[in-house]
Length: 368
Image (cartoon, rainbow, N blue to C red; front, side, top):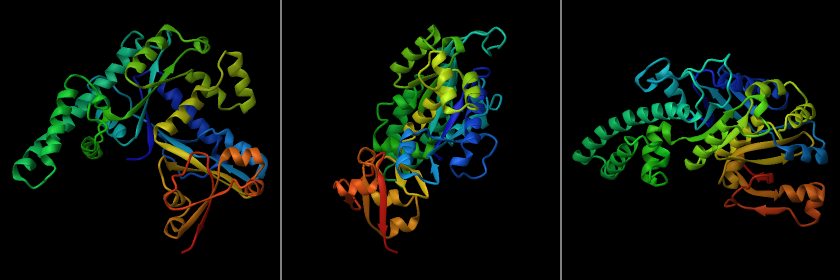
């Protein structure tokens, strides 16, 4: 499974416009970071991070390179997707390959844009897609139960009995139209083992993107309020955006974009919030290297120890790891750079067991 975010939504909710804005952001940032050829349905965008700019003011590097997030535009969904209706099977298989779901929800009225259900109702729209994900999971878990039952009887798999018990409980939970993410054993090792194989759709982290009209940017309309209440009860996050406006903002400078947002009563870009939140929901953090050639953000999973974190630069760094020289971001900025941080005793030498923190400025010593 890739560390990607799948964008889903019913027709005419703003999903394609949101993806177009992300694609433009990808192209706008192309000079700032390297990436491979991207398929038409994917956008790899830089994660906005003002810390890199602050580091660059001190180091004055030739270039800045950001961490990135990959977004995948999932094929459209209709009722019955779990039974293969429309592009259902493709839709579901594409979601299975992503780690987080960004669900764009229509929260605006516009008589010129037809809604597939003939009215605007964010909660109903969410539940249509949620139902399809749960139905697909029921099919998956039912097949797994059949196999586990055979394994438990034959005794060939020692864990089959406990796994079967968990699977049956999960099936009962799903049959009540409840998502796998709300299953009582969600955080147990046995469920994690089961889900690692099945990649249950309704177990994925969800972010709701409330797509509003420009007139509703400054304050929540009734649709957004209902969506926020629903999301809070289900432990999900809501980010409000005007997809149409976000697409227009990408072509502007940072100063121009911020000025336009402030004029409309918004403090920051919804698209920027989506990118940052997606990065966090993927369980990712960044550490930095800062030199005259480049100031760069390196992406790692939260919890990585120093040798594993070093491997994202080069595998040899992990194999021959000796130690890491670490300066916290705050110390680097407050003291005016690496040398002054060293003189103030703020550079630490860390070993193999050090868990890298978000914002650490790192220099690795290794020998191969």
